[in-house]
Length: 187
Image (cartoon, rainbow, N blue to C red; front, side, top):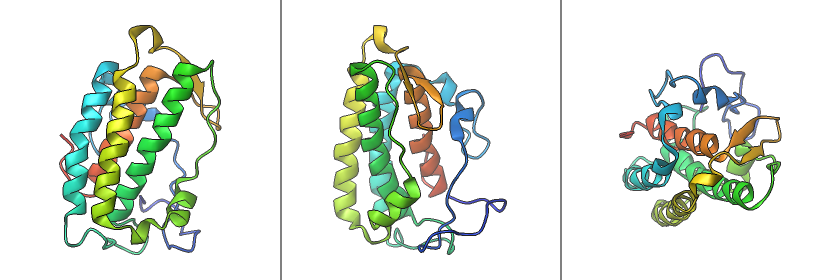
C-alpha cells in the first residue's frame, strides 16, 4: 500500500493513502509485481480472476493474516477485503460499460472504503467465502462479454478512459498486484 516516497498517513487507521494513478500499467510491465497487463487477452480475464480466488483464500487462512507488516501498510486481511470490494466495483463498472454508452464511473475512494468497511476487523473465514462469490461473479461477467463489446468505452471520474478490454487488464493487475503485496503466489 505504501512506498517510502509517499506522504505520511492522513487517515485515522494510520494507513498511507495510495494516490497513484496506476493506469500506466496498461502500457508497461509493473516493476513491483512483474505483471504485464497489456498482454492479457480479454477472454482470459475471467479464468485468471478465478485462478486468484484460492490464492486469496490461502492468504486468509494464514494465522497472521490480520497482522500489519508495519503501521502504515494494510495487513493481508485488509488487502483481501479490498480485493473483495474491487471485484464488486469492477463488476458494476463492467456492467455499465456493456449495457450503457460511455458511462462515467462513480468515484471510489479505496481508503475511505477500508475505514467504512472496517477491513481491519473482517472475519477471515467469511471474507474467504465473500471473495469466492464476488470473484466468480465478476469473472462470469467478463466471460459473458462478446467480441463486439471489447472496445466499448467508459470513463473514470479522474478522466481516465477505458475500453472493456483495458478495464479487464487494469482490473486484473490490481488483483494480482495485491497478491504480490501480501507475499502470495501471483501465478
